[in-house]
Image 1: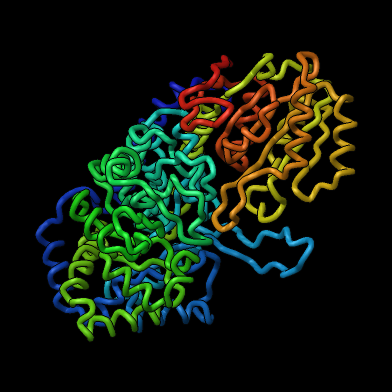
Image 2: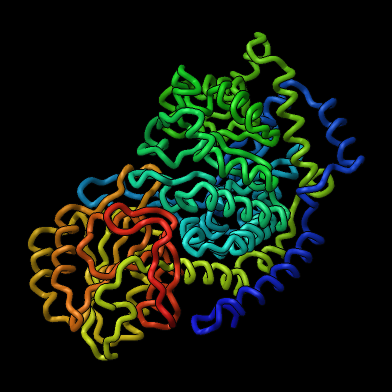
Length: 614
């Protein structure tokens, strides 16, 4: 089977490339038009005719992209009534497809429930088909599939985070991933992927970009982003670079507040803007604007989302980008606390945005835009320019010819072993061993050795989709029969930590699985100090006869807080795939050869990584 743990990765990749070419050809013939060729005469006529026929209200609606969750939605429901009204009365131009959610109890003291769940592919496709049938103009649909359709939709392929691609160091893998994401997206009716992330993550305290970035070297980030763009085009979808003009060197999560980048233009050109230029040259179709202020270029302190000097000036005029400009979610606190939904939409369009994304109130946004056009605050020519770009994008996707998808095709193109094989290759090749003294990886322990596995969490809440250890622990137990697993977090009591400390000498080896998230809206990035102290204490007691190994899931910078661990294996990711890859590495079943795409202060520099043979 392709991508199996004991197969040659190079042979796998060659085989997967051949299969990828065949699959892409079949899908492009069946489902989509080319996204990187000029419009033909018929498509151009459709754009011109549609422009002429649209009313002012309909033109304004084209600039709004609303949202819905991809759980089953009956046509006879309040939820669908809302969407139907947005299409037929507000005339929204498209939708952002989310996963799903479920209610959780609003309790104190034990508020560890996670309400986020994955959506369903057929539900997403069916809802989009129904909405497309209602729309006078084809809808442009999008999703935040940064690391695959499986990020939001059950059954879709879930790739490792971008930083694992950076550690693997092969742009061909990024290109294959982009193609797969596009193929699966188009199969469920999604046209625009909000990826790749072109941010250069050179701030270890960045609480929201982190592993979503390919790394901290602008040239390598640009090469990976460009490869992903090419792959998305091969799969027939549109690629979006984010978060312009760069969100990597910030320590503020814009879901919670406004971030600022203090650098001058020379520094921006050399670092933040460089990957965007490279990926734009590769044909990026859209750019998402960050809720980040650049006071050196816009002294007003406005976020780029609302800044004409940054959108119309820096991006359009200086960088020369003429594709779609999309705001980041207008529901994020950085914007929602600054202006009403209507005023925020007006400021974004004034600045140069073509799409106002995920407004907290689409109806208010439409009304405010109409008033701004009527008063002359926004010239109708400004609206027309955005509408023409949007209609052109829809024509490039072939939506003027066919806007619905076949539900029977979903299972043939979403998920599957061939797609998973590519994700597995990235995960395994991205594993990075930054410390191994004395040699603890792979674990040379007998099958009957007593193994203590500590799942060390930043905090226990909201782990619903990628519950820590659900694959790691059983797979270790398959290889070593005497495994004891304990979970620790910021909720662990001093007595519990002391019990672990006292019990540790009774084991033949200790594996510390460290889970630290850079999660949107959490504002957190660290282990609790008492827990980190315990890990360091265990690390200092490691010997060749009783090794202690740290395996890091998620934030690689967390290694700096447990610097006394003698062995450190980085995965840059969470979930079943990362955990399976880590177990294989610990058991010596696969080689380890990833290289650090970021510097970890006090631990290792960019490009470092120990090589371990299978």
